Length: 108
Image 1 (spheres, one colour):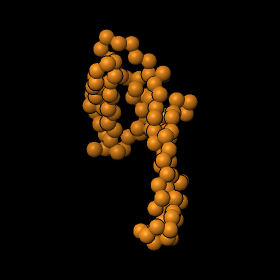
Image 2 (spheres, rainbow, N blue to C red):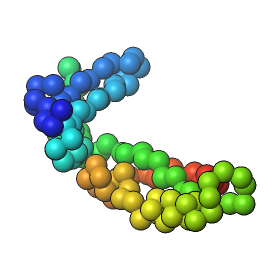
Image 3 (cartoon, helix red, strand yellow):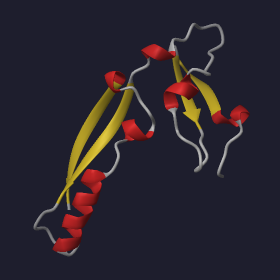
Image 4 (cartoon, rainbow, N blue to C red):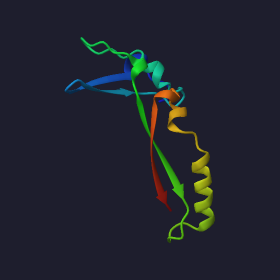
């Protein structure tokens, strides 16, 4: 869907022990600004401060190897494209001071 109604954008689920899961939905034509959407989250009977929420994102590094698989020039092209791709933190407009990147490396 190109756009999601504001009423359907946020879903909050209580998981128990003061833990909540918030699911945000965006259409493919919308900017996924998570901090702005997070400001609209309310928790029943709880005080919620969105400016104190940390964000955890994954950063996967792909390296070319001598293992059989793709043709070498395709491995190098894919590695280059992956290296130049925007990070999840940038895509979701996350504030850099509150982002924790967890990195992994994959050999192709």
